[in-house]
Length: 570
Image 1: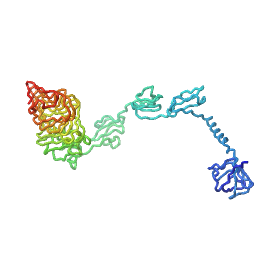
Image 2: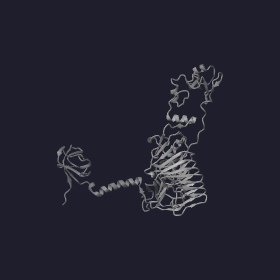
Image 3: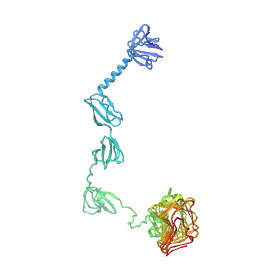
Image 4: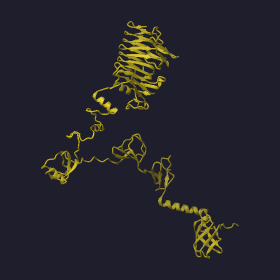
């Protein structure tokens, strides 16, 4: 036989005829040792347990025995709740009851476009949480009802943003809600396929009346009104608005009677006053405070004020010593003064523009150009006999790049002596260097890297170009390396070496001189370094010539050079 299960850990206390049992040491509730319906026994008396309050308290039917304290006990585990099926049946009954009264949703998976037809009963709903779509089952068929989700504010309309059902946005002062089941972008409201008007922008209201009539001088015997618009008058240099309708008598009397309200008080010491600002403690300080330049006396001006004053009267800033400007494409700003590395210009062109506005006198100007990539540099005329030098990175010319679609380095100057060194010049449509207009330009430690089908170096219209130093590097081809002419231009070389850093092909000639072009090249050399130069060596025509080339193979190439009858090669 199998004995009844029981639990008897600890001791108990209960009053005679009481319904509350207090235990010391048991675990009645948390471990499931006692359930309603179990029998509580101590001695020869028993009672039915009606509730398990916690681990140390029970509720029983009235205790038939005498009062107990610290007494032994036993709980006979005979409750029907210990039968698993009964407990589950109670839970299922509660669940079915709840469903019968409030219904339940059939949930639709994200991967599905509609509910499973085998699920649900008529009158039951299906819902897809990810989209907000809802269906109802009727006559055994799921019927789509629409999307039910909260409105989602998206701010001002953005044509690139994808909108979904329930999103709302503002366009031109009106708000619209997205109503299409399929998310999309690029549909500007109003578009009835995608948007429904949520709130329309209101009409512009009527313009209200002006608060004041045009100001007029106060006159006696005039009828003044409160309006709107109210009468607005001037008297004694101050202005007033009418507060009480009246016919004017004496202004002081009307003002004292509260018929006028002050709008603007006449000031003291104004420029129209007869005291001519004599009330100011310091006219000079006042002028400085309001940014006025005085000509009748000495005044301390800021640098910007001095520049503005010079500009106003057309006076150039005159150099009294050699000058240096700084350019840095990474940290500079063309709004700076360019005088220190901390206040560098952002572009070489800004430095040139500043120099062009100076009176350089006999002094030289140097522009230090930091490693970076810059736009075109156009050399301009300047006043004075000194020289202007743009100094890049002689140790690494490729670190200072002057790149443009037109000529990378060109001149609009008439006269002037320029030196450009330590830079890589490159043009995508024109020459890398173009010197003209009787301007003298010396190139040192340069790299020529243009991608255009043109000449890399061009001197024309009286331009005087000198290639100096041993570090000239040719990286690309084109029509040719040199074009000298088109108006009595001159190329001079001073111990210069051109090194080729790639195989290049010239569709014209390596050196071309035409229309009074002239080249002095006795100390000029070419180093191929294992690379090849393909094309004609030279083409000299139209009263042009060379001196110092000597042999016909002086210029590199694969085809012999030509010299017409009006020209010479030597």
